Image 1 (tube, rainbow, N blue to C red):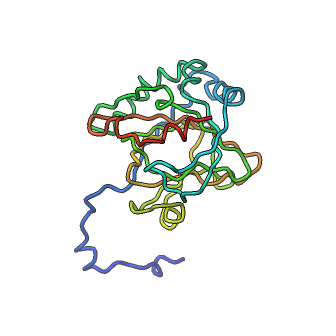
Image 2 (cartoon, rainbow, N blue to C red):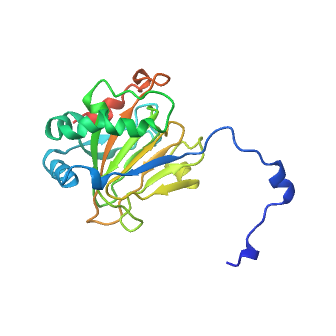
Length: 235
């Protein structure tokens, strides 16, 4: 397409435009893979192979953005197992990772009261597996990726631009898609933006990510919705 064929805003429209009062969805990413302990990703992938459990997610909580009758299989390693088998990861969650996340906010970030709420290792494999559509209850979410994702593999993080999005179709109507790389550590606030992980597209594809939750004085852990722990951690 030639530049002169692109639509151009009128001078009046530009002159009248005002920045929105609400910030659009944004994130910060650190490339930490090369500075983590040698073999960190191999250790966690092996742990997932040995200790991951499977259960089915049902959207019974207020933060879910799924059809009421949907059931989505989840495969996870719990925070309790991560603390026992990979204690260095829990130390990073409460230490350096929290410090990095804190650069995005003026508030002090708090770790959670239980190990399972603090950390989990989520696994998606081939055959169309995806992660449920939801909004977060915590003001800072951290994601440490163990694998590379792309349009070919699927598994991108799909985030609604429209704060009114209520389900996957709404999200897909106007969204951004993030394809992370191994060793990248993302931080963002998605309390107002529904998001989900798109289905895997290859039978041999693997998506592995450590999730971490932080709360703050203005958004304490007590706002965590009823039923969420049961759906994420139940066997």
